[in-house]
Amino acid sequence: MIGAAVGILIAITVVVALLPSSSFLKNFVQENPQVPGGLKAASTEIKPVIVTINKTSVLSFTNKESIIDTKFDVLNPNGVTVILEAITYDLYENGVLVGHGQIGERLEGALESSNYYTLVEHYTNQLDGKVILENTGNNPELWSALQKNDTKWSIVGQAFYNTNTVLSGQPGSIGFNSTQ
Image (cartoon, rainbow, N blue to C red; front, side, top):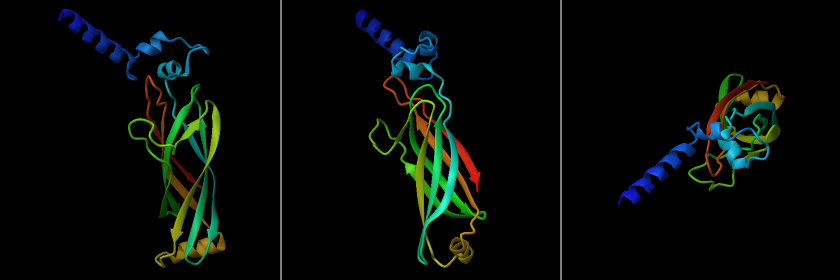
C-alpha cells in the first residue's frame, strides 16, 4: 500500500516536472546541438513566428467572381522546428471587409490533420492564400476597382503555431496586419 502511494507520488512529480510551463527542463537541459529535438524544443523558449505579406493580387477576374491571391512570408526565428497550424485573415479593399481566408487548420488534440506546415528553424516559407469574391451587385466600387486593377488591399490576421513535440507543446499565436 505504501509502495503504491510512493509510486503515484513519483509519477506525479515526473509529470509536473515535464510540463511545458515548468522550468525544470529549461534549467536541466543545457544549450547543446547534440540534444534531441524534443528535449531542445521543450527546453527552449519559443519566439513568435513572423508573418509578412509579400503581395496581394487579382489572380482571375470575371463579372461573376474574382480570385484574390495573397503571398505570405512566414519566418521561424527559433532554433527548433515549429508547426504552423493555420493563418486566418480578413481581406479589406479600401477599408471595406470583402472576404475571409484561411491557410491550414487548427490542430485538435494530437496531430490528426495533415493540413499544417512545418517551419524549419531560421527559415522563411512562402505560402499562398486564395479568397474567392462573388459579385453580388452590392459593392460596385469593389468590382470597378478590380476591373481597373486599382485596389488598395489591407489584411488583418492571426497565425497559430506550436512546437507540439512528444514532451511538450508550446502553442502560440501572433496577430499581423498589412496594407498594400
